[in-house]
Amino acid sequence: MTKQFVPTPAVPFEDTPGALPQTTILPGTDADAVLSSAIENLSCLKEDYLLNDSSWRDLLAFTGIFRTFHSSKTIAAAWKELERVVQPSSFKYKGDAQVMQLGSTGWIEGSFQFDVRGTHPGKGFGFVLLVPSDGTWKIWILSTMLESVNGLGNPDTAPPLLRSGDINGAVNQDSNGIHQGISETTEVLIVGAGQNGICVGARLKGLGVQSILIEAEDEVGGNWTSRYDSVKLHTGKYFAHLPFEATFAGDEWPYFLRGVDLAKGYRDYVKRYQLDVRTSTTVEQAKWLEDSWLIQTVCKGKRTAIGAKHIVFAMGAGGQRPIMPYIPNRDDFKGISIHSKEYKSAKQWKGKRGVVVGTANTGHDVAVDMVEADLASVHMVQRNPTPVIPWPWFREAHTRLYHPKAITIESDRRELGLPLSFYRNLSMLMIKKLSTEQPENFDALERAGFKVDRFPDAIKIQFERQGGHYLDMGGSQMVIDGKISIKSGNISRFIPEGLEFQDGSTLQADVIVWSTGFESDMRTLVSDIVGKDIVENIEHHWHLDKEGEIRGAFKPVGRKLNTKAPACFHSANRCPDPRMWYTGGGVAIARFYSRFLALQIKADLVGVPFEPYRETPEATF
Image (spheres, rainbow, N blue to C red):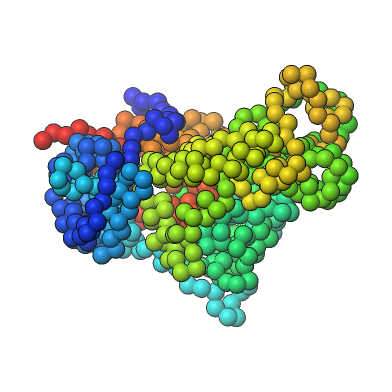
């Protein structure tokens, strides 16, 4: 009897393992010699080589999925079991030692290459972070990731570029399912052609896999140009590149990319790599038919059916469905009340009283727009303290890896390839230090009535809430200067002239913009397409599992038992078929993880699918 599929439960970040050791790196340490020796020892890894509270993160290379193991006993046992299958060898130190000392935590780190055999022979890459312990050096953090598979290709290899004189790109705006040179069966259908869909489509094409991207907007990049006019990335342009290239490196691109810049960059990219994007098209329904998907699409009222071996849902970092809180007596309000998804500009509201509900990035952007549009008054409504990260703090960490001379894939490995607990713990350490040393801006905000979370858990925000913070791009100064007023409290109801709060106070408004976020679990959106029967057998999207890995994203969203796989790969959970995928997150996450998603799809298409290792062994020696 088949067991019922049980989705992976979400675990709060603070309940996942991982801590910073209290260690000091002495001057004169020969980091290269220490690293070289430690990496050589990986060919016969033993528990004694590992710190008791150590972590090993693997991305496909050993486990065929994304896993993070914790504790020396568990890591040694898992490594011993898995090395019989993947037969790792030729561990080679790259000679790039770094000595790090952040407060009371010190370590040395370096990277290495290695080979794997087994079902997916190829090349791997890794990092090792070492700390002194009891007179010797021990592995604190180990990271391994699959770079390429023999015969499948390397997902970092670009497909051929568009040549002069070729067709002007591959975007088909009114295809009705007919596209020159492409039949209505494809290997992969990707729902969404924003940053996530484009990254996957490009990686797949580099591996020789055919895909069709379905995009609801009228043009590529419309997911950015359809947002408010002033929208821009709060991170630098070197962080925003698409796979294979430095997309936005040229002087013609501003450092903070606007929505129109991103849209143009994405359109140009699609043309360069001739990705098959069907714009003005939506997916109405997808059905699984034994060994492939039958997908019903609609383009300007015309329906067509497309067959695909795999379907990838790439519908945005935080979904597309706005969260609008229920507030009684909406019809009593005489003014304008819209969600930020509908907001474009405040220019038409000059002289009116503006209210923004929500104090995260979008809320601040809208409030700043209102000030600059000369509204008579601007208020932000705040319920709870808001995590605020001053841009100079972010820049200090951000530009170390993402700058004009950076090699993006190398930066991404270091930024995203280690255990998530490592990034969280370092982030909290640095933010606590800076907040304690530089409290003046936060003090001024609180004097203005703005409640500040002075010690924001930035990584938790990203991987649990997908927002809710403010990366300060100047809005805080407007609050301090009194240009943006703050109203704290819970809203109880609409009144004709604005809002009433639970304490009985009121706030007058002509315009209310609700910056209250979006549905974060893509599973909810997918349900509308694939139906309840399939959704009940697939994972949720986003938040973390007990190991600190992202649930659902970039890996099979369901589980199917393959009795031909080695015994250590067997799992009790089953689902109809794993040829369904989520991809979501910001551009760096989309860029980095798309390489692993593309490899998994290619492997399945050629008949050698990855078999995820789902056990967590204890030491038996």
